Image 1: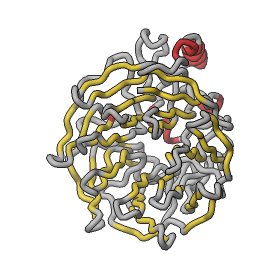
Image 2 (image 1 turned 135 degrees about the vertical axis):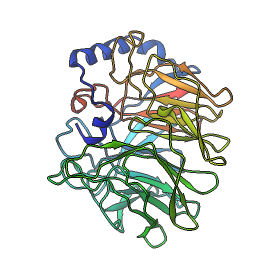
Image 3 (image 1 turned 45 degrees about the vertical axis):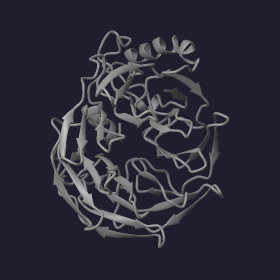
Image 4 (image 1 turned 90 degrees about the horizontal axis):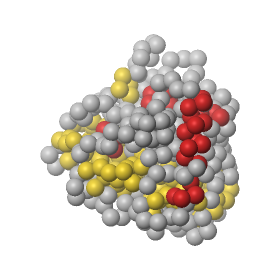
Length: 393
């Protein structure tokens, strides 16, 4: 397994248990496929089963999926890309990236193109390369290289149209020690070049990073590794990037650590929800507050998507109760809704498949597209998913 999965799935399960989970869920898929309110309905399948990929909503309403890992994690990562058409519910292969990438980022630019940066092939050092996807032509072109190699970093579109990249690791399962990165840099779409900016106070990878309504960038959690065979340290610290000064400053820390990976959600009032920490950050007071308790049948979800009604959909947790098909810690199909007005969680319709390392994309219709991922916690290389589904709020 690759590094990103080991952080959140280091408990051991049996292959038999995972297959029983899948069998139980498939038996109920026909009922859930109707697609009513609060349910998941199966949609078209990816041309290539994958996990740890990216998904980007384009300005034309289609969804671009790039890279990730496929049927064998011990082979190279994927260079292929696909487009989802919400009107037809089908996926179509588009132009291939210059290299296979996992642990990369994909950012929609103001000009409608998508910037993909960094990532790695399996068992080699991370890339410093970046490339642009043009939806008008369906083609990829190389752009300027980053100032250093990065995997599992964060990328944030700034108010001025530039892209802030921070943190990550410099290698992935290479012959050298993997070290988390403290440096940050900014991509200028007008020139296609990268420029170093202020460094993080704490080096971190797989942090939850998001642009706040006040124009600052919040990054929280992740893990830190100083190399020399030192164990990873899960972080509670959080930092703010000031776009005017180009500097990071520490803000208040989470109570407890975040499971990895974590997807932050910007609430309608400007607060930031970290679903799998069950806490939200108030930028005005610079404080963290616990949400209502999650149902005890599952570990917190790692993926979150803000819905048009202001609530948040969470998926991608791990089950821990006999109620959830007696799966005992495998990826779960259960989904949760966070109520913004009630500051509380409730269970919503289950996905047709249990998933981890999948993507969630809010479509212009208000539905949420769930794509890819894997369902077997012990052998992800044998169980990537091609199936996709739509959640109707």
